[in-house]
Picture 1 (cartoon, rainbow, N blue to C red):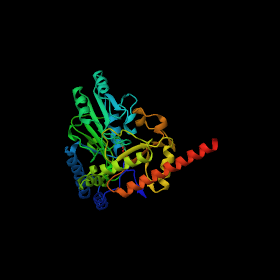
Picture 2 (cartoon, rainbow, N blue to C red; picture 1 turned 30 degrees about the horizontal axis):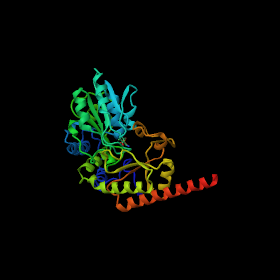
Picture 3 (cartoon, rainbow, N blue to C red; picture 1 turned 90 degrees about the horizontal axis):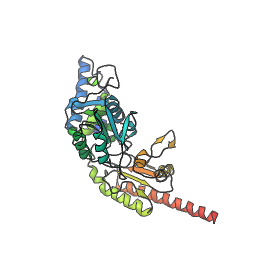
Picture 4 (spheres, rainbow, N blue to C red; picture 1 turned 60 degrees about the vertical axis):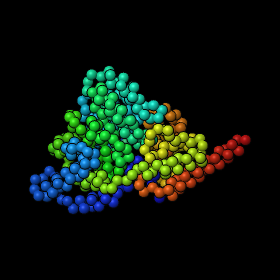
Length: 368
Ligand code: PMP
């Protein structure tokens, strides 16, 4: 089996696995005052330091959560004021609040900066802008520095969903009002992430109970997860740039085989590990099954819920027709991906294309 779904989740790196296995022997609850509790607290705070060091922010700015979904919910529901969210956000940010104002994107999936300025110029309440740094479906990178400048001109907070960005792009982490991370997107375990708040953003709490995480997020902390996340960020980091030639090789070949195919946002700045492509006339689920039957795990560009393929709100916001969007495929890769894997993926795409052409020829013959 070949894995081409890194944007859904990545393999756990050995460094993180080892650290977690060791941590399983830690008995105490970090809130307990006895020696066992203190030991657990030390491990948890050490993990927090590791995360903080990676992003060059003070450790107290980090609140551990169950992942990016919770962190996005926490900031958006906890913020008192007006919320502006880009049209291409992950579902965990998009319509979390009914009073959300959507910021449109252009045909390349980039936030419309002039519209953002116009929107912000009309508010007098505290405002929070939420933008995904790297889109999970297309890999498109947002101009976060420019958005930050606009937010600061209009006195608005900027929250960045960086779930897909960590390690892949450079951001001025300590200048963002807040950001979200999720360990399983960079070699850590599932079920742990963080909301990082820089400065003095006041939030209403989502989960109440004990006073953990400076009373921002009650509940006994996921120490093993936090240790896994800290270890993933202190391990020697993968250079995502090394995937660029593979991405180029993949896309050139896929387009050579099927010249009508569309690579979404091809000319825009994208991360090196994501190819969102559509083979017109072949539904995503048919493509996905064909790849699966041939030993390759890819994802449909559209989000699947209850067995139905719904068209992607991301592609829709970019002005892509529903017809084409229903044929979208997301191929995402990472540190274990080899040129042979990419060639295998190309071969399976070619066989899908041939199969489809044969079907079309047979269909035409039947009606001739
Ligand atoms: N935001 C983005 C951009 C994502 O890609 C994801 C995961 N697909 C999430 C948020 C949610 O992350 P988690 O799985 O940690 O809840």
